[in-house]
Amino acid sequence: MASVVSPRSGHSTSRPGRRRLVGAAALTSLALALSACAGLASGDEAPAAEGSDKPAAVGLASLDIIVPADPGGGWDQTGRALQKELQATGLAKTINVTNVGGAGGTVGLASLANVTEPNTLMVTGLVMVGAVETNKSQARIEDTTPIARLTEEPLVIVVPAESKYTTLKELVDDIVANGKDVTVTGGSAGGADHILAGMLLKQAGVPSEKLVDTLNYVAYSGGGESLAALLGNKVSAGISGVGEYVEQVNAGTVRALAVTSPEKVEALPDVPTLHDAGYGFDLTNWRGVLAPADITDEERAALEAVLTELHASDEWQATLEEKGWADAFVTGADFDDYLQQNIADIQAVLQDIGLVV
Image 1: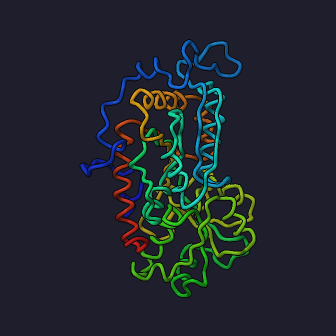
Image 2: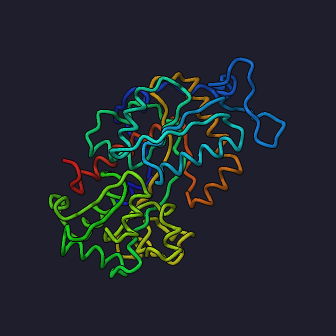
Image 3: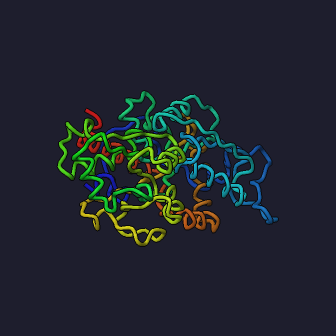
């Protein structure tokens, strides 16, 4: 099961996709991207990094970033980090970030379909892949232009500090025994957090057809809301990315029961993995960015070039370390192929755990 949902798994496929996800023409060369510098007016140079008198090799005069979630969660953190470091490196001069939350990111995805400005990026990830299926969204990732996968992050299962649960098995066994009397909070329905809860119950012996009647999952579109529910003892447990809960874990206001990575997490060295806790899978949550569907190959290549430069920067690498995000950078046809396979994999997992028919 781990290989089905882990972003580290292989990703070759021949399944047909839509206009931009697969079947796009060979990517325009990096040299063309550098000359295009989409968004720079004729005669403009790319903006220089602060404190530098040398302009960047590539850059954008302006960029819009859509965060398809409310403030406080992993997508919001990713969008704000992109804004901060693109400006710090001089790769973009003016960056506007807009939060368009709701329905696991599919409200934001629908809004992207109406965008005509080519210098637009929308944060996406595993959560949106699942939410498109569970919400039966008319807007689909296949109808966008994939730009880059940026990071991956393990999830962590936590309980309030005074909770009776001291191990993950105690929590899962209580859900199996008492069903909806035990509440679990996390991100949007069908996302990575919801998938993890379903997989844990499936491994504990709950049949797929009974998962919906057994699991009381309280979905929030922002990490701040789920954390508030935990701190207010309104829920029994919570699931989110390590970066969203690590400060509260270290402060002792919540207790971590397990992380979902194959190995222990440096930021939470005393927290067991799912394998340590007796569960035979792992699950990491990838995040990346999409662009509008109808941008040109040159505009796509320019966006990819800017993110490639950002990925190589000391500023971005420092952000990865600070946030505890694993580097999962990939662009172009490799990201197209990965995304297509991930969509197929998550469709299968959601059916297997009873979240979609």
